[in-house]
Image (cartoon, rainbow, N blue to C red):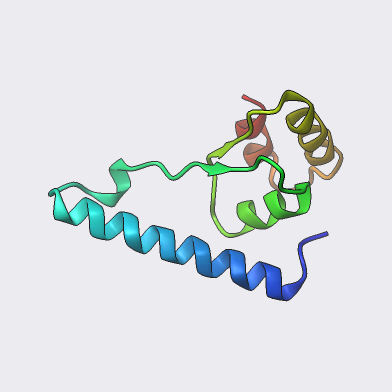
Length: 92
């Protein structure tokens, strides 16, 4: 289950804003935005928000609480269907 449409739209808007800021900063120092990795920190966010982040194209997720990470990983493993590669990236 993904977050409610309003929450999903807010996440989409924040993601677009951050990508734009990264592009602007990269251009200002003659770098390619592709050289910069956006890592979304998942601390305190529910697993559904992580699913939405993956659906929006985020691929690098960070979690610093082992117990939360384990819960989220287990949830992802249970819901694996066509996106196996994204799940494996999270686990590794």
